[in-house]
Image (cartoon, rainbow, N blue to C red; front, side):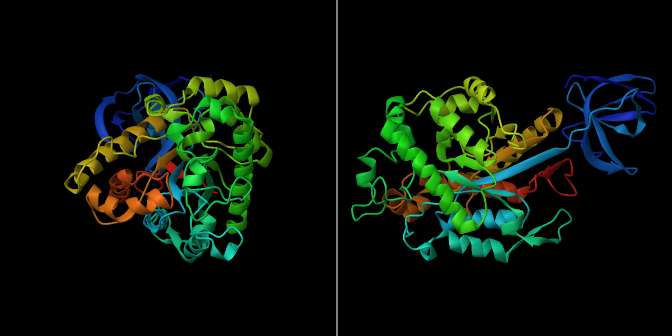
Length: 418
């Protein structure tokens, strides 16, 4: 921000807090009357003596504003968050995790896959997502004070299209009937719907492949509108495939510009995640810096509000673990959320997204998930990795432990409303 830092003068002995703007946060020191401080901006925090404004200092700490004089008005930044559960619409165990998280107020957004393998493209009444719509319509989210929201989950949730060209099959017939008797094989041997790990720049530059991708995006978008009766609240993509090449990325930006739909940002936090993400792929993924350059050149339509950064450090785990390790994983994930929340409050961002992957089940060893789901996912819907299901459950248990946003205890970060 151009006017920061702002000068502040202490008018009464005041404690310095670390981690979050609260009198219950860790006290790491104090300032005496007459001392000067340097302020980045103010944020909403815990109400104290009728005042919920807190100052963020240049060293990343927090001080209550009630006893601090500032010669000029300090810029105030309201912190908004989109907490999105990905990969909804294929497995009930994943969908139930998201519905429970929505109902409890842990998340406010879902990214929906529309190509369920049991759907008959010629019979909309067969669509799996119809059942999801019914479930969302029948439930309500708990509000900040624990009471039920007046709106049902269908109306109060950000529901986005999770475009895929690398899981399951296409939703249209133009490039081959999706669910023929030989299942998935004839598609993977063709030009479309290969694993994201097997894609190449040459393949994605093939005019026929590009035609198929663009056509499929429109088909998935139309199916989404048919099921939910509204525009997607945002566009995301499975494995972030829409950021794999310049042409794909620019097409997605232009497509969302024309339709006025926000798109998940490529700016991952921590940044190293984008670098590590590149390792298993045969394609050379463009860096965040290059994607920034392309986005800046194309521009965004006025009124579209994309998240400024995307936090991707909650899902995992990094290595396989057994059920006995769930408590340890919860602690690690909770520490990540605390670090992320503090980073968000100190930053000059006002809108970020947190990406998570959930499922609801009692603590299970990874081999239990593989025994139950691996065959089905391999034959009916390749592209969702059952090896990560214990990590999805760990994420669910972490949010169940504490979701440090949009509550009376954590008023500093609020949900972005649809």
